[in-house]
Image (cartoon, rainbow, N blue to C red; front, top):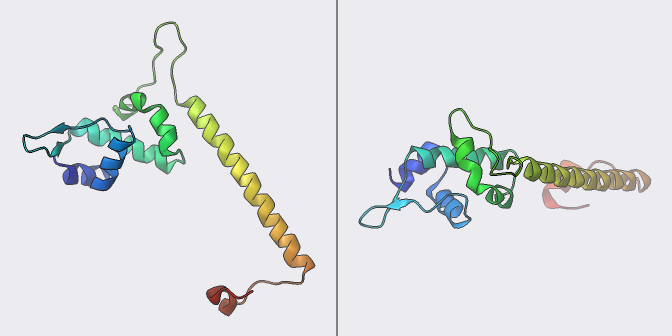
Length: 139
């Protein structure tokens, strides 16, 4: 199928497919004689996995670090990542743990910022902005 059909089947856009290809998440697809990209069901399944991982909060860089394992997650049912040789099974676990730590740090930062702003509002006597103040940016 052509890029527009594959994008629609995966719930995304042709631009996203080209972006995933450029960033190494999606291998370069086969091409027709006229040079148009050609996708099959495996690529569509892989794009769905990519979109799911991104929707869960992983970044493009996170997913790119394990792009060579995405085909396993795209299988129905998804397979785990088997070990390679004498090494431990290669999984997304370290990537997920790093993303969780980053999200936890950001939550702590934002919570502290919110608490500081709330304290400032209480000590300065500032109340909730009125609808007019919110719309025009007045303090």
